[in-house]
Image 1 (cartoon, rainbow, N blue to C red):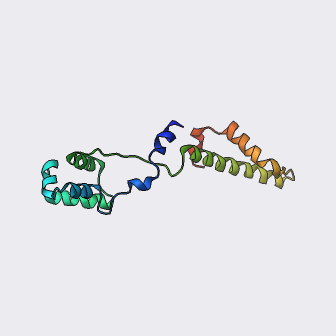
Image 2: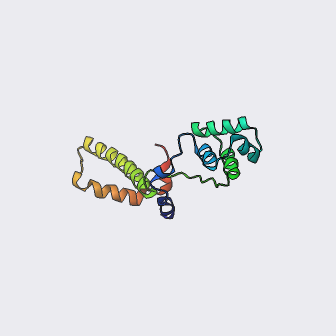
Image 3: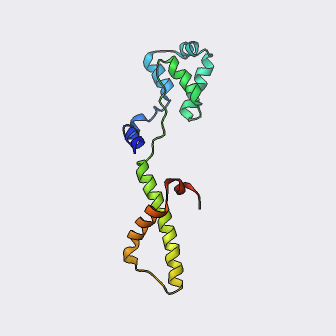
Length: 143
């Protein structure tokens, strides 16, 4: 998947973990800028800069506020959702879960009717079910 390739460059995500007091405070301190000076650049009072830094550290800051602070610090805000595994892996796991659930339901019914199937070919039946019955859109319907 093309998106997987783009997201791979963001791993390991630990590299992007925010400093304890947040990026705004860390950058402001690194630049030797006071809260009042940053406030002037953003167009807010120094108390508002303090509130911005606290809300970023707490994870409650709004993106547009963070973007304004980044611009005032001559930075670019980078925002991304980075999956914990590849998108392809997520799709495969979801398809396998659905196929296994459906095939186990059918196998149970058949066993009740004394028509059990051989467990040896279960994996091939799972693969066939995924290939023939599921589309990516079907994977996310809750059932």
